[in-house]
Length: 181
Image 1 (cartoon, rainbow, N blue to C red):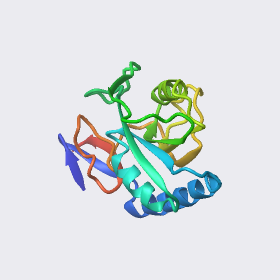
Image 2 (cartoon, rainbow, N blue to C red):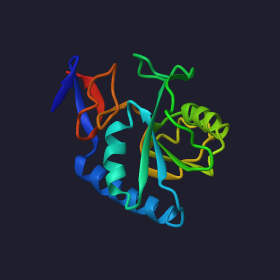
Image 3 (cartoon, rainbow, N blue to C red):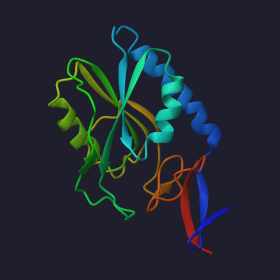
Image 4 (cartoon, one colour):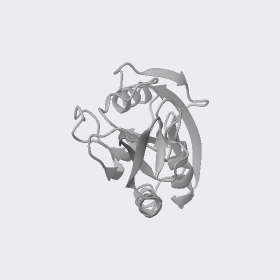
């Protein structure tokens, strides 16, 4: 059992569950974009999506390009502040291209809504969202996840790219902080 500041970390999703679902998502995405001519552009939302996106892009059986966008709404907290800050923008245009942005988690949906609005102004041919996790109980209902890994309860999760104050992204599973030990 892992511990962080005297708290246990309990696995919510195992490494094996994640690996299986990422392969399934890759097949779904490959099928959905099977008729496009140009490579699909995956836009990873930093930093949380990095591990998920690395595994996902290897599960997609078609030409792809990778881009990243840095966005923050948490800072050091365990709850979103609601204020979205772009910390890194795309390095090339996405006009008339098919874009799939990749999130680690859709919590309230405010960050995803902001990204949709921001990317729509850049006139992509299509824009969809893939997220490893979604918390429907927290959702404001303003964004649709097109490709979803798992629906989870309203708990703060860490691991597989998700962090607490920058720590524990490297856990091979998604975990929940337990009670004080």
